[in-house]
Structures are given as structure tokens and as C-alpha cells.
Image 1: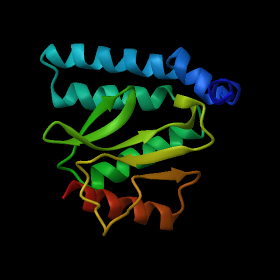
Image 2: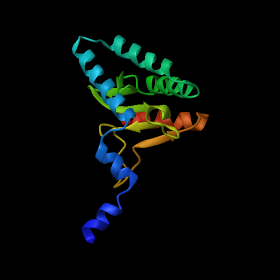
Image 3: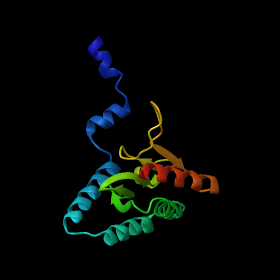
Image 4: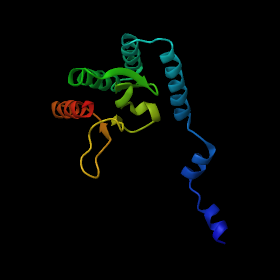
Length: 155
């Protein structure tokens, strides 16, 4: 019965995971493959910046406004980071490695947009720290927090 119990208690999440990736995940992987191909074709920083701005322009409101402001905050707070797309999202890199990124809620049918940080972000604080922040609106306080996090993350 133990074996049968395991099968009987499978959740929808397990069944979905067993079937493969969601449509959104497959689309993101295809975008990443296009980005990698494009990078091989001697793309420059200006092209990368234009690609990020184009991705932001495609977003529906209010996310477009959030992404535009986050982009401006990152460019002001950490001008050494390079803007580029990453899985079809606006992202910012140091020495070719993604430090932080803006993930629109629409990207994976989420409830809110997030500002995420990868391993190369220098945000370590003790034994545990956040690597993603939900953004629902940009107040002066939120903008100041983003600027401070991005400055720290960029090292």
C-alpha cells in the first residue's frame, strides 16, 4: 500500500513538473537562446541597452512604468553595470555576469513584479538574506532602497 499511497498522493504541482516546463518557461528559454545567438554576432553595449529598452517598451502598464523607473535607478546607482536582456527580461551585468534583473509579473503570470539578484550580487548578510523583492509601486522610500541595494550589489 505504501507504493500505491505515493501515487495516490501526487499533487497537481508534481504532475505538472513531471510533464515538463510551462508555456512561460519554454518561452523564456527560447528568448534566452535567441539572446545567446545574438550575443555571438558582435553585439555592442549600445545594442544591449536598446534591447533592454525595447523589452521595457513591450510591457503593459503599470509594469512598463515600474521597469522604466527601475532601469533609470540602476543606471544612476550603478553606471558600471551593463544593461542586457536575460531570459527576455531587463537585466544588469558586471563582467558579463548578471547581477540583478527586473522580472515583470506578466512574464510568469505572477502576482507582482520582482527585482531579483543573482549570486554575483554582493548582498551577503550573515547566514541568510533575500535575493528577490516584490515591487507593487515605487514610492520615494522604495526607490531609495532599490538604489542602495543596486549600489551594494554592483560592488
